[in-house]
Image (cartoon, rainbow, N blue to C red; front, side, top):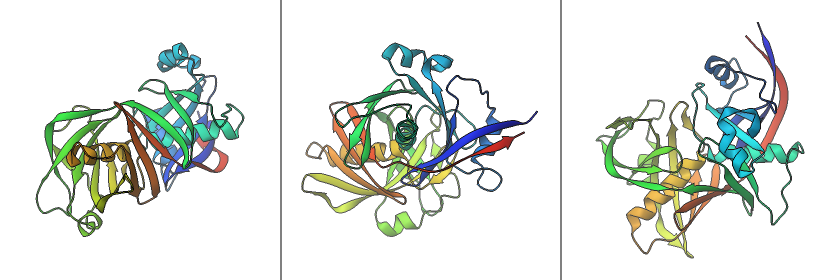
Length: 287
């Protein structure tokens, strides 16, 4: 039996999403249906789906309810698989809540949104919105990364910011541009939950006026190359700061194909800032 689904298309630095309002948790979309929504030729098209559901209306929202987060971001990758979190997606999710009157956010206020990585705190920022992604972890074990366009495997640094990443440093802008990310990078060993893979080139100079800067491209698990990845941007800045040593700054600007994002570190927390926009709304019939 077919199902008619209302949606809004949104994006944050080119990382685009299909937002599906389901406040009472009535929808039970299969992985195939999510993939159909995100299909760029036969569906709406997006790097993932954000189901907008009240925390109390989904079993995954128990922690969010306890923390006082009314809304839960049920994030799915473009292939329909479940993911822990999305740094660009949660800003788009907040923007949708504000634009539709489901939440309010004053200049000095904060909004809690539930995710599978726990409830996260968002505020307004100069770039749009800022989300505290919570504690990060630098992994001890090195991962070798092979990618089309690189002549030899490169070492990657594992960084966990609520979801897993492997960050690879490249030697030049030309090397970054020469990558062919239509092919999946090969990781050795393969992390248990897989990983997004970020390829970065630090700017020269690396730091100006106390702020670090770098460029990045990303291959997202379950999606492919995207124009931006918020948690990946955060992981890339953390990796470059780790490589740069004790004198490295706590504020970073990261350029991705879809735009520019800000990252800052406070203690063991990493915060991501950037824009969000809604593109259009409609409805679609799913088989």
